[in-house]
Length: 429
Ligand code: AMP
Ligand code: GLY
Image 1: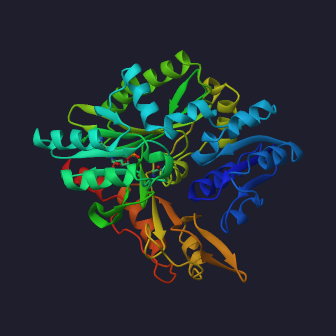
Image 2: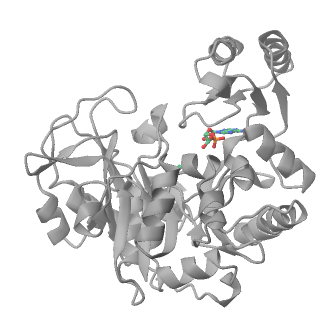
Image 3: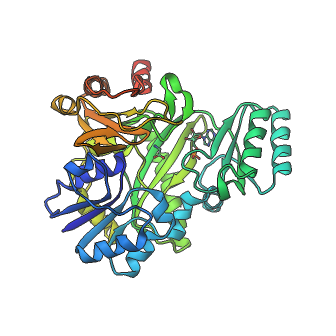
């Protein structure tokens, strides 16, 4: 079977890397891909927002399964178009993709189905929103969370510790800093605890969680600096104990499934639930309708089954028949980023040491890379995801950093503490 992966980041590289090993895979394409993906798939020069061209490509190249990486084309209706054309695709229709595309829609969905989440209020004008913030802080809140309603490429959320910074952010939202996304704003109770990511496959009939993982969202060590798309991840996340996982299944995933059924949402793909493990138990921070990146990198490093078979069955509504096989070995992925990320950065610097890194046994997923004069250069904020397995989380971390340390390009940086929370928890237990 021919397979098409849509996207160009580390997530799509990890998907291609695993899908190409399936015995059923004939040709594997990636649109548009990147310099690293080009070693594992045939890259096609079609952007993720060229929906008609993607449908046309799938039709003319006899694609048996298309897997969509990022959320934007799903929110724009890519899966609807594929299904209307009789093509098999992994990803929800546009209506269901609003679970990520609109935080207000997601919050209302959670409330309707009793899914535990932060209390919140929605505003469409600055003054009442600012007043609500002031009231909360006067009533003794330690923090408050402001979320622009629509897709804002990860920049539309502020966890504010004082009224002034919350109100400054609100005025940015309402003055159009996030385009349409700022016209409606959610103000949420601040939750405290440790975060984890739960990815679960669903075909609308069954929901099957993958192994747990944990992202590192802040740019610098010890969770300092600005929020990013994610600077590294590991799996499993020890904060997700068997007891917490059972609660997530009962209190989040099963009600989620009942919700999409009750509302007739066509959801055949992956739901990514951002969880805060609070003292009262797991609470949902957000839904995404795609795999987390970098979370999917260590998760797929631990997947020992036939990914094409599992994704195809999900896309066909036969998830119940799928077999997921996992390694017990933990895995870690460390992101190497361009200097300046998540702000402005320079591109086009040659990347050294990729072969030496691979020789250590690590797998280097490419996120923002391109070819320039025959060499691989950085072309994005997050550039590489260096992933490794180990018998223990400590060994996986050491293996990942051994490979990280032989890679270099001008101004590159990475966090040195990926996995530290898992180690700390281990030594506490
Ligand atoms: P979101 O895009 O909604 O996941 O928000 C991005 C990040 O903001 C999350 O990963 C959390 O680190 C943080 N965050 C979001 N909502 C809350 C909340 N209610 N309480 C505390 N932190 C939050
Ligand atoms: N790593 C978080 C995300 O993919 O949104």
